[in-house]
Image 1: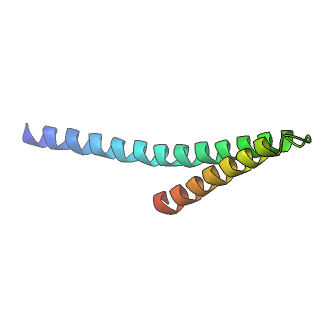
Image 2: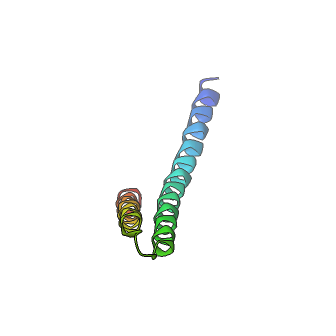
Length: 76
């Protein structure tokens, strides 16, 4: 009986390890996607008088890009 409980515990931790690995990659992908979304928004705001919108979008893109880079460095 003890052996079965130990095996079940091991199996749960093995599954958790697999899921955490996937979640880390999903986080990196999400942050990279958000960075690209903000860059796309910055490119849409090229009209005169929308400089503030463009600057904000560029700053957000840079923030998400740096978060993705930091997550990649820490996770992988």
